[in-house]
Image 1: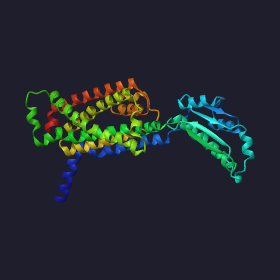
Image 2 (image 1 turned 90 degrees about the horizontal axis):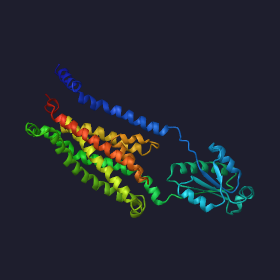
Image 3 (image 1 turned 60 degrees about the vertical axis):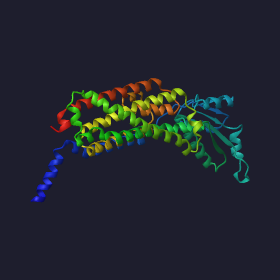
Image 4 (image 1 turned 30 degrees about the horizontal axis):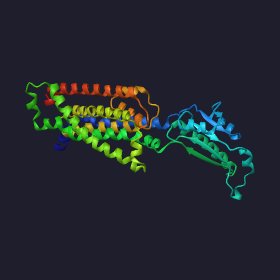
Length: 380
């Protein structure tokens, strides 16, 4: 009987506390949402591009490629190879396919056993550009399949115009914003959880709340210094990663970082500044709502997992619209990815900055309201 009584007591404690119920149920909801997003990204219908490609020389393979891509007028014949290459390099065209003179006849006459160089098809493209890389993947696949059917009687050569900086920017654009958010969140979490929940447990917060100080002043007095401290920790971690990643990828640090303008660095700095108080204010709100540091830590861990996955998945889901600037935190991640990829999204950066600061102000107001709520602060 004593065992049953103890069991009833524990079940009653759990089911009468909505906070514990949320902590247990929310991870399942979060897993469903995350896996649904990942599934949609992985199994989404392949995007249809309208390519702009040049071709030099004549071959029956031109018609084969056009039929496989299913785009009328896919190729524009050119005679000035250097001008066509320059357009591909500058992103004005997706690719240039070069067939040497008399290619088809040379293929039919070629004998692999002789050991002489085989006729060669050259495809000029940019691997750092999704559309150009997609064209190269399709075209090289078609040409390789046809080559295999002829017992390797010609070669396919890919000529990549994407520079070391372009490739590095593409890689950094996907990882750095994710790491920034994680470092800011980790730094904020380490110093903020104790800010309110810890004082609740020690009983020191009640001493402050019985004075005539405004609740908004108490809230700002928590968020502003904690935000500054979190920014220092996040900046240190970010600089370490930003300076080491090019070396990790076997690239020159100066060449990668020097490829961005002063305006790009200014926009990145503004976005990071908008992320720090937003995250610190959110953790402060969780700490204010929780009854203990342990409970606040449980809530914050769930939120951190959600933000981590959302920030990382956004790097691999192309075509996210401009509407994302209205979503706090995620807007900064997406805009930072665009900047690091070589773009200059000025208005998106300022809108994201404004949205994040507004969201921070709303959370500070919420913290001030909770500080004045006796049921939340003292369980009454």
